[in-house]
Image (cartoon, rainbow, N blue to C red; front, side):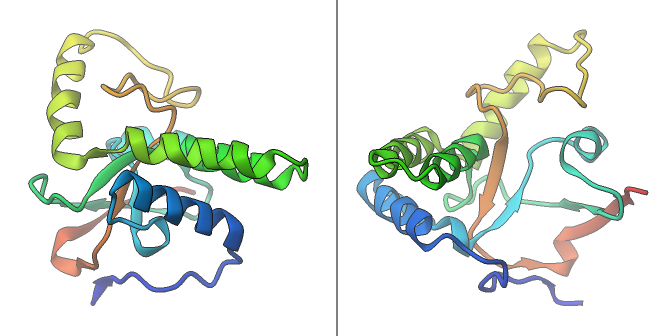
Length: 166
């Protein structure tokens, strides 16, 4: 087994949205490009199943090196917001989408920093119960939907099948 390789998605992409995100990443001094990443969630698999999966999905655990500077955590909700704004078709929608993209990259943090800060948040909330079907648990950067951007292939040795959702 090879693992997970980054390839050009066969899904239809919104070229204008990708252009905006690439331009805003460049302005922010970020080398990472969303379309050239593996996406993951920082939630434990048992908490991910309710929020992000559909029947038939396979939940994978991926072991990441937190010291890798290229791995980022950002708010996927900002990407969705930019997409929605661009699709409305009004005159100022591109500016509105660009604003969401700018915030996406400005707020993105290195994975290492996210992990360090999340440990503090987890310890402060260890006795709090969350409804994972309705919301994500607190995170140090108030991301609505945190996503990990992994800008490299992931070898099979770092992947484990956790479960499948039926």
